[in-house]
Image (cartoon, rainbow, N blue to C red; front, side):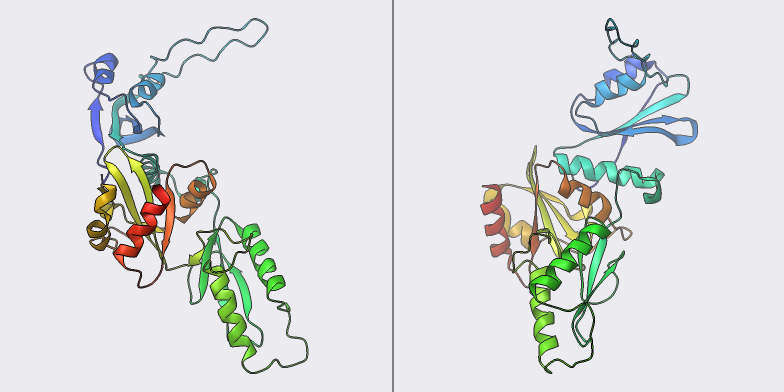
Length: 298
């Protein structure tokens, strides 16, 4: 389950014969034209029914009196040559496989369904600690991700109000130890130690670690996330009573090219989901992490 190789079924023997080879479970599907050109990608709950709906085999829709006639069924058979698919065992695994496939064909700039995230950079060396909004996680003392710039702005303003920080220096000097203390308090708030409604629970240091855990068809599925990238090569499926060894053996280094999954992860976080994300504190032991997972998933 840690990688998502696609199985390809050609249409040379006919659409019906090809559809008979497509599983009926959830997964990610793709219709291909000559030269492996992408026609459509989807993440349906039923792969066979989804493929049939794009190849002229959808059930006809009955007309409703007084309304416009239904659209004719989609039929890509004149240009389609193959169906590619991968079965998945959990909703998060399905979303991850879908995003990996979409990234090959559709750049983020063309994705209208995803928002660009925003981050807050803490400048502790200023006369008063400053929070600067930026679009990337680069630099030191950076926290996030926030859904977008507006969300980061709301969090910044809430922190200024909570810690009584002026947005400008004015003409006086604070006590020598005040900036360090305020910066530490703000950092702790951004890392979840203080409840601030405008700071989502997943906001941490931008280079931090977390785990997405979700019940799937192969047990409890665990996906490591580092610095905004999901390491699907290190994902594991384990029984709930055998978590510690698997957590201890997790690989936190991405063996594939570096990725930034933050835009679609933010969409997942704000949407309806069955899994949960658990931030990992620096130095937290596998036993402590496993205990928190059991507490969350039951």
